[in-house]
Structure formats: structure tokens, C-alpha cells
Length: 258
Image (cartoon, one colour):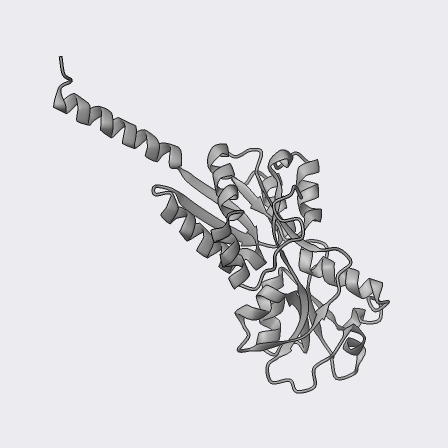
């Protein structure tokens, strides 16, 4: 005997409701430098998986980790350095087995667009005409940590100490340069591209370690399967193309555990 059409429709409806409920919502905490690219990636993810919703939270990597420490409901963490992700792993905040490096970046010194005499290297930042230099706070901002490492390696950290102005994240350092409030700033190559009509890259900074971006599911996530699916999407060619389009570069160990 066949099933009542109304009953069939009711079962189909329940199945559809169940599928939608499983899709759920995700909160993704990503380094400030990933903000624009991850906005596009999140929209692409929602299009590919109807019924999903990605809430993007951006800040300095260290600040994002502290938010999780204090109980913020986060599903996925993406940082601008492996050091911060190492700390998150050691504290059990993320699932280390599902951690992956998905993209890389470069560090550059930028100056306001109107500047004619651009510094050609780190040593020239000591010249009198460069009075102020913006960089992210090295204690919480990976870009600032990379900059400090490069300056220490060049023997210039203490020499330039009086010129340095620390910011809450790398985008703030970029904004200071764009507004002409400082003479130079350390930012990522991808950041420099976002405001290329207002800032000019003066030179690329040699970093002591590669600028790798790892991503991992947060251990306390209530959507672990969805978190892993989003991470897989971030590592896909579609997302990689988006990131490369914003000036990121392929990681030497793309797809390997961070």
C-alpha cells in the first residue's frame, strides 16, 4: 500500500529541515590581514552550501586567541603566524590534528603615495627624514613580530626605538601611512595592495621566518563538522585563487600541518 501523499510531503519537509539545521552558522576568527579576502571566501562558501551562514570576526591574531581563552564562541581560527597557532595548540584551544597552513604573505615597508624619496632598505629607516614608523604591537600582532625580528637581525631595533609607533593590528599601521600620519610602516604585501592609490611599497623586508597562515577548528566549537568543511573550502583552489588575487602568495608547505 502506497504512502499517503501528505505524509510523504511531511517526511520530505522534515528531512529538508534537518539538513538546514545541520548546516547551521559558523563564527570564523581571522587575522586582520585576511579580512577582505575572507569576506569573499565566506560569501563563496555560503553560495556553495545553501543554508550556511559565516560570521567573520577579524582582529590581531593574539587578540583573537585571547577571545577564545575567555570563552568567545568561535568555530574556526585563522592566524597570520604559526607562533600564535602554536600557543593555541599548546593550550588546547584548537584541534592540532586538523591544523593546516593554507597561504603565505610577504612583509613590506610602505610610505605615503606622495613621498618621492623612498627608503631602499631597512638601514635607510634611520635617516633623519623618516621620523615616525608604524608597526603592529609585536606582543600581539604577527606583522609587528616579523618586523621586530627583521630589525633585530639587522641591528636596528634599538636604533629605531624612538621612531616606532605601535598599532593594534596591521591594518591600523596601514591606515596611519595612508593618512600621512607616519612616514613609513611595516605591513603585509597583501595589505599594501588594498590601498595602492594611497600608499607605495618602498621595499620588501627579509623576515627571519616564513609568513605562513595556519587555520584550525576551535576545540570548543559546537559545529565541528561544519568547521572542518569550511577549512577544507579555504584550502580549495577556489579560495586560493581569491587569496592570490588579494596579493597573498603560495605557501612553501601549502596544505601541510602548521
